[in-house]
Length: 142
Length: 147
Image 1: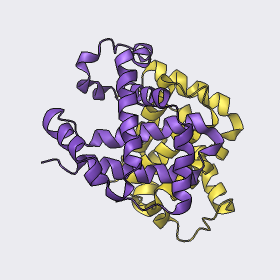
Image 2: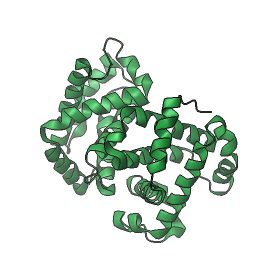
Image 3: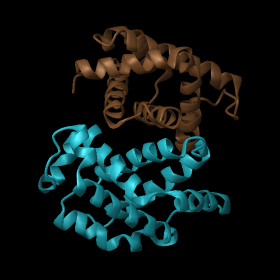
Image 4: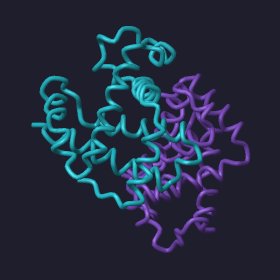
C-alpha cells in the first residue's frame, strides 16, 4: 500500500492549494473528532474544549505543522515522523485508533470545504497518505 | 437502539429530506470501491471497475448504491429497533453475501464524507456526530445476526 507517484502528486497539489489555511482545517478536524468520537477527549482533560478554544486552535496548528512536514517528506514518512512517534508512544501514549478518527474527520473537513477538489481519486490518495502518517506515528510504539 | 435528542432527530430529518438518494448512494458506493479497492471483491458481476472513472460511471454501482441508501433511510424510521429492522438484511449479508462487517463501517465513513461534500456548511461537527451515531448503530444492527 505504498504511496504511488500519483498519490504523492495529488497530496502535494492539494497542500499547495490549502496554503497557510492548513491550521484552520486541522483545528476543525480536531473539533469534529471531539464531537463525533468523544473518547478522544480523554487525552485532553487539561484543555478547554469548548468551540473556538484557543488551546484547540494551538493544537490544530501543531497538527498542521506535522502534516505539512509529512507532505514535504513523502518519500520517508517514518524517518520524518520518528520524533513525533516517540512523543506519542512514550509520553502522550495515544491509542492509535484515535489517529484513524482524526484522519477521517480531516477527510470530512476537506470534503466540506473543497467539494470540487475532493474527487474519488483525491479521496483515495488522501486516505492513503493519512493512513501512512498514522502508521508512521505508531511505528515506535513497541 | 440509537438514542437521538429531538434536536438530533430534526437535524437528520432536515438533511434526509434534501438528500438526492440516487446521487449520494452511487457516489458513496463508488468511492468505497475506489478508496478501498479490496471491497471490489463483492462486485465481480458489476462489469468494468478498472479505474475511478469506470467505477463512478458504472450503472450497476449507481443502482446498488441507491438501493443501499434507500435501505438506510428506511432504517432511520426505526431508530428504536435497528436490530429488528435490519435482521433479515443481516442474515443475508452473513449467509449469502459473506460480507465482513468491517465493510459496513468503511461504507458508513465514506457516506459521511459524501454528505459533507454535498451539504458543506450545513454539515457541522454536531450534524456529523449524529450521522456517525446512526451509521454506527446501523452497522452494528447489520452485524448482529452474524454467526
